[in-house]
Image 1 (tube, helix red, strand yellow):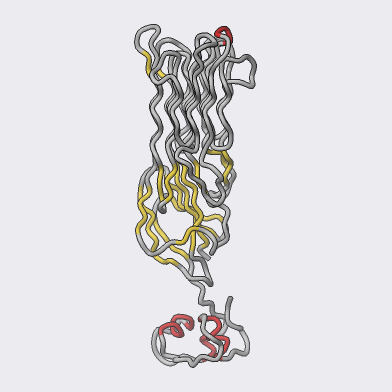
Image 2 (image 1 turned 30 degrees about the vertical axis):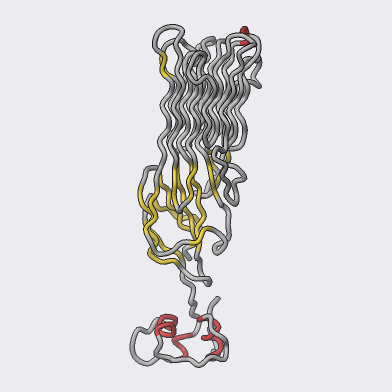
Length: 348
């Protein structure tokens, strides 16, 4: 709101300053001088015409871009978000956020896909309806992706490690769960923001279970859960498909079953907090003997397909994507992708 540009009364000044319209006014007071933008000397009523008392959030830290009336701070590595002005109700007092954790590593030796890093966001929110901030320095931590499982001698197997947490503004997203392999210990996928997938099961009597997603349980205004479960693995041995890792929007596909609908990485969620819609938090796909299992949208890594010969890949950096699973008896599963934090606020 602004004061009139034409005829103006003291009641208009009071209203702009957030006071009752009939309050007495000291023309030499700091609020009046600030509104008039006259730091010293006499203040005329004309100095108060067309003026706004709105103050907006101002801050430093990360890579800063502008999207219309909004500033966007992007953190691809750890740093500090320092608020230098907390604004007021006439301008802006809160921020939007997206916090994505590091993805889990893929399993090895008939290994499954790693789970995506947890994703929490309150975007979009109105200028005064998001996360309140004060004039202070907020540490921002970007979680790294977990390493892929690494096999040794033939018949061995290894589980991928889980990704690390990301945090900002007292919001913490949990790293994605690592995925298991055929003979890894444990043989189940690990829990996390999204769960790691379960490695291939030799025979129908020894089922493996995908790791649980949204563990521990977390939600944000625009994010019902931070992630989903990894796929399970059981069934006849001849199918030769490991499960996919869970994603921010979808559970990973189950393994040991034929066809393109199995062993996929769970899809991530799109978010346009930076000004353009981008997917984050895709699960890695499971390794397979005979088929190429699709990775989850949002940076998930591809699982190895021994035939027709597709290699394993890691989750994409700064997406929280899970690593793909390695089918071969030697080598590593894909690493998880690192996380990301984005903070947005109205600045004019």
